[in-house]
Image (cartoon, rainbow, N blue to C red):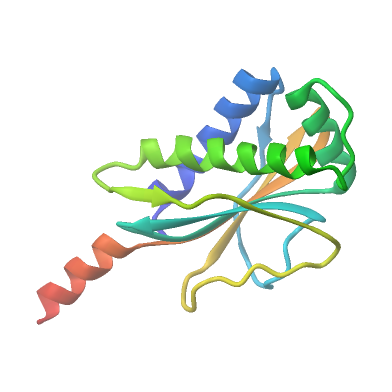
Length: 163
């Protein structure tokens, strides 16, 4: 996978969390994720289309998600509360939107976010698209960005050159 598609997510999560939450994010070493289960219990999911196709997941342990949502909203909210899912969705929306803005020479659209809460849930990804897991640490706990996208524009260019 092109590092130019991964680096924007690392920069964006740091920008969003430091700006919106005053919460620094330490980025760990990205790695290819082998299984389909998300890393943690709470996931904000957003699809991408256009020159960049796939999905991005912002995954949190439940306790970390509760702390981060409390910082973001200014109030304690439980995962059963509608506002909790809205806050997680908005965070993944801001991270994906920020990353999208950093893509060089690529046009992409992002979908409305979805939020899934529960242990060992699975996010289906396009076949043949590797998922890169980017571990992150904050004072509120761990989180992970899972990026399973491909450069559709580059794929089309390769196919047209082969023809």
